[in-house]
Image 1 (cartoon, helix red, strand yellow):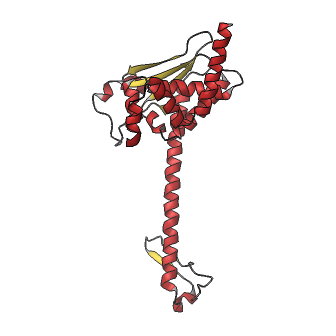
Image 2: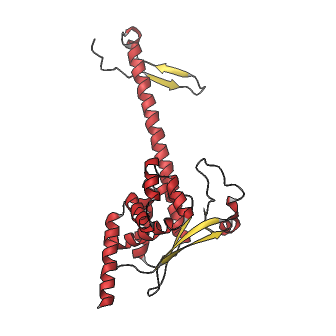
Image 3: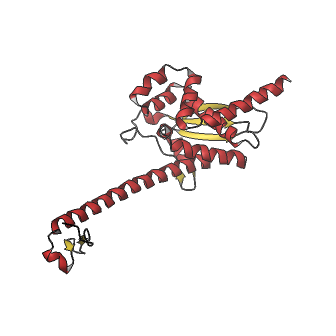
Length: 250
């Protein structure tokens, strides 16, 4: 039996009283395909709700990501639009990568320094009460939570790591190299101490953990950049560094 043109048109309507009513057409009364039609309609509704749920979760994740990025930008000090735009792209791409979750458990800040000073990174530990005072407008620093979503214990609340990237040198008219510089410094920061390494290990697959542990600090830095998707930017950054070293020799 061929399906009628109206097949799947039956709807379940929720009344203001909370009761569910099946909305049909007059010709549905004697239709032989009534049950299949109703089943098809219910399946379509379930699929629609499933899609909406997925979309809502994605929207929530995106809002969370943008809130974290706004917090970092507001609490950081960026002097030039060039570095600022590169930092924004780095953060957007990093938080969207498989290892992006590794950054959500720490406060990451960026400070652009005047020229002719050395670029480096530092990690300091501050108390939760100090973090409570660090706010810009309505943006507030959040205390880290564990993977279960529980608040940290008393020991964890005694000190919270703040990772600071000090950016000294940028490369004019080379966006990829600037992004590569930022990505390299952040990856090096995470791969240079036990706490940063632990945060990365928490989001790795079991098959990747042993591989990561066997690497040296530089190998881990490059591996993290690859996971974040910045190998092209790393190549551009290293090319600029090589040119700088060549000029110094001359």
